[in-house]
Image 1 (cartoon, rainbow, N blue to C red):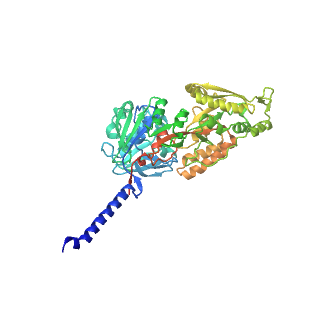
Image 2: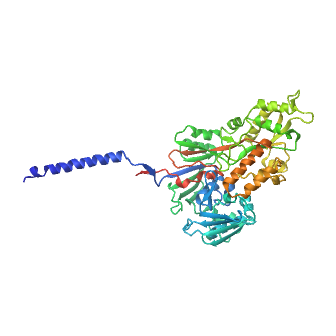
Length: 544
């Protein structure tokens, strides 16, 4: 039969079908209907204001950029969750026995160093013995902790720590990054501190050191990372010599992230506040401000006076005026974001009630407006460091106290002499202090009576056997729930006595580009804690 009579219907069907497929394909490509999911790719730039010096987790605590980079290149036996709870990292599990004095860690199998060498228990032993070495030049607190601890490798994937006495916060400190024995074996403490390795580090973390220049450090995604390769391909730390240059980079959207401390110039955080291309995160630090009172001074002998001084301070005004609105009330020094926090009730801000309480306690105003009794005058100095921001904070507090009849003079001191000549020897009347308990909220160093004698940090010389008992038991319990209950009791004993006046914990502003996804808020045990889940961040997406 002729073509036009027999095959036209079939041909027409093909043409129409082809057109339909083409239209469908175009519509699908133009309007993809799959869900967007994270994908590999993208470059991230973090703006910092200090060049790296030693990218080594054992020596990084004095340089924030070193600490930041080390947090991404290295990993520890444990990692800290957002609330400070230890969880597995290089160790996949552990057992605690002998009343909390023996720890056995079972390491992940198949973990590789970033140079391809195999990670094993000897690397862990090497790292912690280096920390315990008398010549160690890193964190003194960490070194002291490891003194007397017996560390041994049972086999290539099992490490044992034997402590001289139970110390519940011990696990938290095992988040320090582990070093590669095969690259550093034989180095003495001084050689380790100055090793070329510190400029070209090799770790087991999510990112691999790629290069370093005068402008900063570049890291690349670790394809063999045991929790899965990070999705962002490169992560750069770009160094800016001053805040003005970093501010210009933020305005130009030349950086994807920057952390602003509470002491940073307000205009830095202000740049990103209303810029929709940035997503600001408010992160609370573990440090907090408090005012220690000399408990032996006649002015502070009565609980009513100490409580009145507390009620006369508008803490929120201090936060708004001195911290740019970045802060939360400190209560007893355990952050609200911590696993150990319990709600406590402090005397509310009420200067009228404070004044009445002083009157009832026998403190009447004299002709000069200053309150006094028959034996004492409510006059004292408030000591602080000579940092302009601290002085301004102290002056704000002094002004509020003057309003209820106290004669307060602010005494700024050089930071070194403030600690050595005023705080530690207890040569102050009232002292504005920034306290940092570290990654574990243990209040023992600040309130146990054994810490009254210098150089202990019970600066108010407060002695309460009930507090001693609960803090001692808190250190001896490896059960977090039990510790939390004990710290609630501690708060119940401390607050009525008011030997110190808690103020606020500062918050940091972490500005991150809105094109970056996956960031999780966390308590800032150190500023580097913001990178805790960086291996889960992503920029690129795909449809599926």
